[in-house]
Image (cartoon, rainbow, N blue to C red; front, side):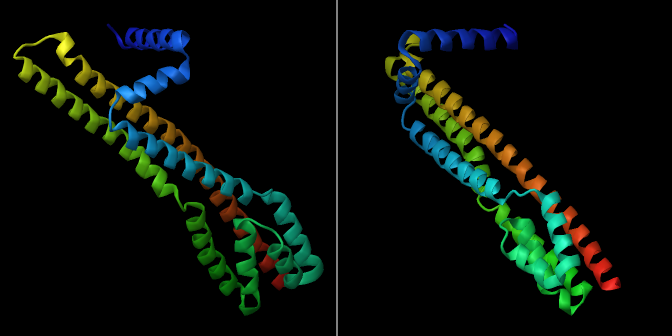
Length: 229
């Protein structure tokens, strides 16, 4: 059987099971049948999603229209000087505004000091954006490992059953093999779900960092232009 045929067969079995007893009942039955290792796998999913939703909420609040904000800052610099631009940054949330504010605080000490402050605080803000991501990555790694551990446990149980019965029969090893396959399945599904969330969040962080770096360069250019007048 090729891969496509195998996937089709598995999908048909799952669809039939969910149609007969409902998705939740089917999942509950398989969860109980999977044995003790299903509990830490479920815990990995819950904690991983909790960290993912927290990061999503934080990153959504950190997002601002960078182009419009940069226009407002440069306008404030031209009309009211560094102090007005600094006040504007202080009243705006997000990493871009925080980086701008750090640079403008050191603008009176010279453009080199402002540029160094922007670079230093940019690294700090990047660390804040990535906070908690290591835990999502950890659960992505742990979930399939727990599944494989459950697989080993199930296979050991199957061989113990064969040893006790002194014969090989599908009925004897069915329970152990079922545990082995279920823990592997759920562990991989959890890992894939969290991996998608992780990659999505990383893409949002990369976009924020890119906007922060690009706008910081434009702010430095605006400060150079202001000092040159």
